[in-house]
Length: 66
Image (cartoon, rainbow, N blue to C red):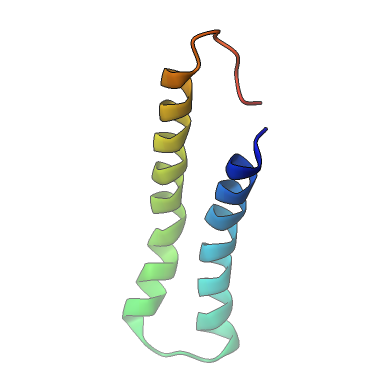
């Protein structure tokens, strides 16, 4: 795996977790932030799927990233 792939995976995990920690840890009462934290996981998943498809399109040998 490339370091760019690892950074993308880390970001897609860290952003939703950080939002959840911020909502519960700091006692934030905003419902907008709660919904952003809830929707961050599926949205980041879509970003990862798009990045994976781009890599497959560039990889002519048929090798997988995992």
